[in-house]
Image 1 (cartoon, rainbow, N blue to C red):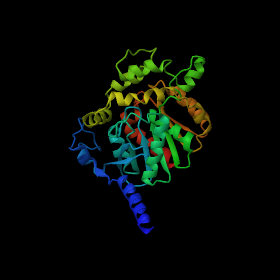
Image 2: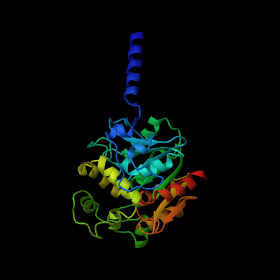
Image 3: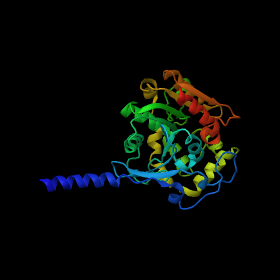
Image 4: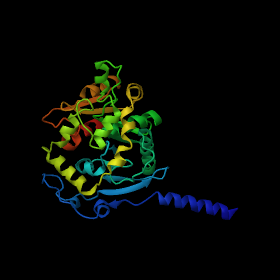
Amino acid sequence: MRKTLRAIGASVFLAVLSNWVAAAPAISVLGRDFTFPTAIDGMPQKLSDFQGLQINTFTTNDGVKLSYWEAGQGKPLIFVPGWSANGAQYINILYLLARHYHVYVLDPRNQGLSQKVDFGNRIARHAMDLRQFGEHLSVPSAAYVGHSMGAAILWSYIDLFGTSAMSKVAFVDEPISIYAHSDWSEQERQDAGGTTTSPERMVAAFTTGGPVNALVTDLKVFQRAQLTDSPYYRNSEAFASAFIKNDPAALARVLFNHTVNDWRDVVRRKINIPSAIFSGEQSNNLPSQRWAQSVVPGATLFSYTTEEQGDHFLMFKNPLKFKQDLQLFLAR
């Protein structure tokens, strides 16, 4: 009996140990240093200038190894990237916010440095991954920020698990329903943020180079993504391109499910903690973000102007303002 108990105890210990890996300096995980193409006062000129940046992993209960980036000390602040995005793109945000918080950026499955798999490619599974990430960190409560699809992952998380493990939450420029139903009025479409009536054509446009036009999806996201008039954005995109090798087939696996979810009931009924919403006048999502603010009790809307880089990528193009606004919200 004692031998059996010892064997069980040893197996549990090994299981826990296998899921815990000491965080490693980012430069050692990535294998080399990196010089950012544009020198910016107050920001790192090289990756090695960002001391304390680490990359770690944990394994989900369905056996997928997910990577995450972390830096700083203090209250936990967890970022959930959008579709195809990764922690490397958050390099400026990590640096700026690590002075005040313990900041984490989780690479979703099939994105960034996380494992590529052909299962679990649903927003609900991503929400479970996020739940298990919080458990892995042993964080009883944290502030969460979701950008683009990352906001949808947070809505799914709230739908499934509630908000008891969330202190505050911020959503950055995500339509409430990407799929525009044919029986909607134009007002309903704008309130939901619907941008496509054909999920299949939209997925093809995003992943296989299919034809892209206004009948398929919102073109402004494509157009604004190509603008590199922000030195912060140039640096973060160059850094991500140097170290992250995207697999288009892997990225495509979640996109259809992401496109057809309608989160209006969650936004209207289930967000019961302090909430912030970020958008801008160069995003076609702004009307839906205003609707979200109108139905979420006490929600704060931060709307950026064109001069403030107010598009879908505002947090990467203007990280200084984003950091200031997010801090203002978190400090209330």
